[in-house]
Length: 411
Image 1 (tube, one colour):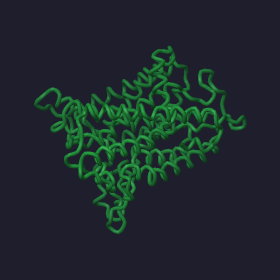
Image 2 (tube, helix red, strand yellow; image 1 turned 120 degrees about the vertical axis):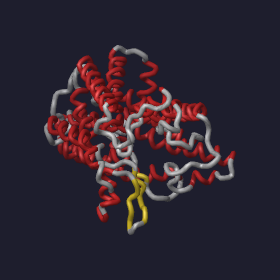
Image 3 (spheres, rainbow, N blue to C red; image 1 turned 45 degrees about the vertical axis):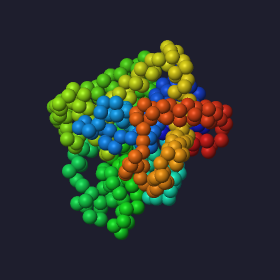
């Protein structure tokens, strides 16, 4: 999420000359614009969580329908995109900071994100004091702490680590926490979603295992070396990497090959359901197929947005997305509380069971009977929330730009 620490570079910390096409703070507009798009897609996903009337798994090709499937699938881009761009932003920071300075910053940032996930974010999901819900903010925090050590290594070593983790983690699919006894919680943390327990009682709802996200962060760090190239070169490399990643995904799906523990691609009774089956890949934990498809699309989008930025096209759209992309964590916190509050208010005004929305840990585990709206209403609500948060995000972005206060970097 938040990936660029807003501090002016100190001469003593600079390790390399700044490429002439990178700005004063090493911000790259296309990264912020792409991240802004991902933030809006994320808001759509969470609006669907709170407002949709659908009771089926949106990515189930047998029971879902194309509009619902696509609404959910496009939001699959968010977590891989956030983490890849976070890694790239760390690389950009490394160009103006010493390894020791960056290590301290990443460890502090990672611990801060984990703390906020356990406290503020978890409360925002349920408005009740239930068990913590560890999701993308938690795993970004962990990845930053791991990257604090990895960034001391040469880029090829970091890249090799990332490739091995991303390509090889599905070899671990046959190992299940239920068979590991006292080590089951450790395995949940690393590779299998579920509940962490204490004396056989669930104490944490765990959605984002560490593997393979640390590999994605490492690859993002290496992608930062691409970002520091000239615009023409980084656009070309990004497009080639994106096309290759998505192409490998298509090949693996068509050949029913290694890389996804789900039921696999099936030819179903309609073209739409067959296409849904083709793209129905496992996110928890993210399979190789999932990562190849989503990272491929993210890299292609980066190449497109970078070209649009270079030629100064669509300035209003770029400016709009850039606002959210420059303050992603600020937007993330606000949008959870706004969407949840809105759902609570509407439910309180329309149904007697509205207290469901202040019940601990129900958002991702159950559905409120008789509640919800069609997808067009979900989209309208999402657009309203995004637009309502624009002034606050624009204000905070300006505040970060003009203020040297260190604490703003942590929001």
